Image (cartoon, rainbow, N blue to C red; front, side, top):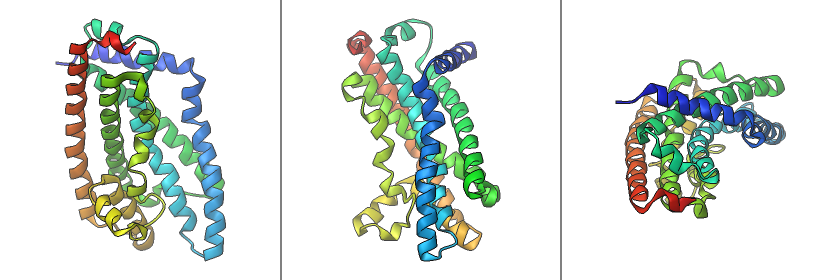
Length: 261
């Protein structure tokens, strides 16, 4: 049984930490704006060359909605990594805090930050390029949920390795999500990938979402089988990733969390 007072305490702790961390604030606002400027202007240029009315929308789809995957993964991985940097891992888990409560707390905190970043980026993209995320209508809800599940899956897998091997492999906290980015077809259709990569993309949940979003742009509808497959894969992967993290945590605790300092 979860103790929600402890969960709230961890969420509050990470919120206080955010107030004193320029790095975390820049991740929420500065870099998303830079991506919008860079990719948005690039999209405008190529859309003008090709006379494609959807060119800029396709680019901004990738910038705005990939933020959901990246933020969901990043918050789980970086919050764990920050405990390693602060040499606080032993203190946290010497308390009554359970690993399941920590998992719930980083999910809640990451979700709150993702919402703030997503709303902020959506407003800026509309102000700069008249890009309206609500053009997806009702489909917007399952799109966001599916991408969140994908991000959490990557986050717990990455964190499983971090809790086991420590800071010596900390670079995967930033590189984890990039592994599936090419196979997610964020900015281009799957058909441009090599044959073997197209087959590999079939087991990547986010590929169905970004393909489906382009389908909505071109036809106004989405194949429901894309959403169904995406959610099915996400639930399988997320269940595995949480079990993997808990397994790696228990293994690391047996070896001694103090060795990670």
